[in-house]
Length: 484
Ligand code: ADP
Ligand code: MG
Image (cartoon, rainbow, N blue to C red; front, side, top):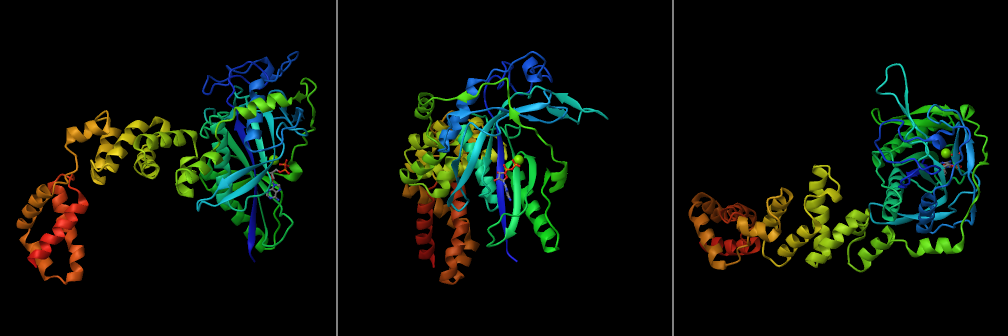
């Protein structure tokens, strides 16, 4: 039996407002516990919420970015449940009339193909507080600082068919919200979390299978791993004649598995009703048009421009447009060196490698875009060869010089293209390597190509890496063959 995986995601994006969605309390991360929850966030008697306009604008911008309908009227509802980190006893959310209607997000897969994932709607809601288990023995601490922080919950249609597609979708959302500047997108701090709905069905069957919902997955990698585990679990269950039950599960990254949290029977009855303390939100056309006119260039448009105008491959264009920081950095390197392809290679190769090794984001790169652009320009105009360029990059990275030119000068890395100078080094190497020369001479002519590597290495070493490698190859071959 062939199985098909079906995935729908509910992504919670923390909006980057300075104050809470219904109060003036600060949303800053990392404050002392319980110093940033005010009477409104706690729902103390007699207080009234006031909607934060910045949160509304951010939600609408997202809607416009995914070409969604923006309804004229949206309404806040109360979702009632009891939990220690929910001080009001209900979460103010939007159940029936969300602020953003149906839209579409384009995802790019690793092979460069794209696919449209439909978004069912997106709604505004407030976050809850946080239960802290680690620092307390036999007790649970509650930090209410996060209570009332604005969230945009983006609910997809069940359009994804693999863990890779789900991760690509999450990356696309991350990229859109950070381009728009409506979220810092910091997953480690919980600024983006998602609930992953997973089911399987026999290939070709139209009806959806019963799903499990994996709560609160907070990294791209965990999304893939949780889905991989869950799909395998469901298929095994079905093939053994069992049934998938609709339930909420938790992903445990330590053990790489999902575990049941509660089944449908134990599910809460949220008793939704319109919040009597908040007016419906009414948006006029001028307000929406103003936001639309001021949207920045979005990732999908940037990717298309990188491909069509700069001639980058689909893959390069998608990697380089994934974050605004990355795209801005790349564009500056390209402008300084004047060659988009070389700029793309350096940003994705040497630079990304070094950033990954030291776990740095591109915004914290010790090598600035201007510095890298100037270095690439020196490769393009043949001032230095590829090997020296890597040395210069390392020196820039280590802060051993202010610019590529300064380092090339100080370390004497200028490429030697003077034939006479290269020939002198070749003659020296040949005279110091009688055994290797004899081997070369005795070898079959078609084996000699390989053996030349030794001599190239010696000459490059003698030149401290500065000789032009093509010239070294060419001249060496001529000289060695003349000895045979
Ligand atoms: P609820 O509000 O009860 O969580 P929804 O119908 O709103 O349920 O769906 C929530 C998410 O689950 C959506 O992203 C939707 O696409 C997804 N989903 C619904 N049914 C399935 C299914 N059978 N398999 C996978 N995902 C599903
Ligand atoms: Mg749900």
